[in-house]
Image (cartoon, rainbow, N blue to C red; front, side, top):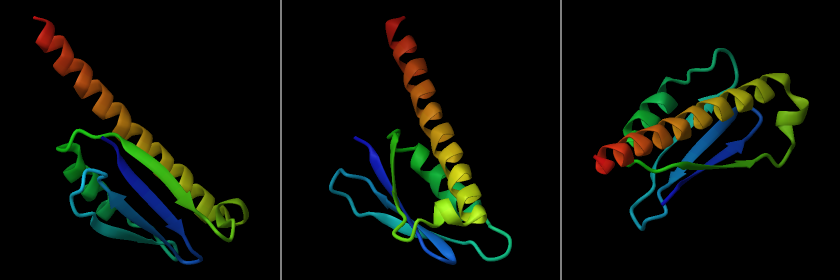
Length: 105
């Protein structure tokens, strides 16, 4: 079962929510402030915890004001988030392939 990751884009921050879709409680949100330097460490730490669940991420964006289209910094952050999520999902797929190969022996 996938984990839905909702990214709510606002003028000065992106709020990231995690919904495991299996009836368990959602994980605490991560806020990325987009003023000044952007600290991705809280997100990376959360994703590291999620690796143990062995579930792919399903990504959603809520950008009511189309800031990812009009604000170059927000656009760069969104592209970076997409790359991080893609890498996470590739890691999950790779781990599952290794487990399946081990089961074949």
